[in-house]
Image (cartoon, rainbow, N blue to C red):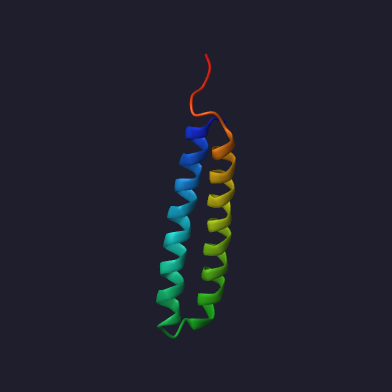
Length: 66
């Protein structure tokens, strides 16, 4: 997997985290408060996935050989 692919995966993970954080905020403001914690935890997990892909991408060459 090259750097561009890793960054694309990181971008997808950020999108998931953003959606889940918004869901957590929505739930926190409604009667579904019990769901807020789970959404926030999932958002944190996706944030960690994005950080991992970004860290790996930083160690890969900027161009591919071939």
